[in-house]
Image (cartoon, rainbow, N blue to C red; front, side):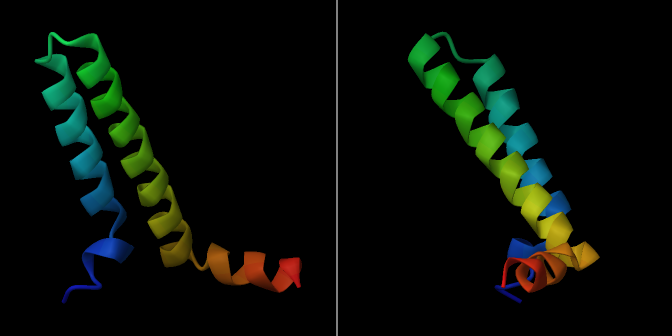
Length: 65
């Protein structure tokens, strides 16, 4: 089951939302920016997981060769 979350776009989107929620409560601007950056990174992971789920990563590899 450990590999399941890495391939689940909703897992990464939930983590991104959690980071945004935490950032909303932060007063320190550097800490807030860091949390929002992490949220953006989680969104990227969600997009990649969605691409894998849609089979796009396989077609991208075939075109890159």
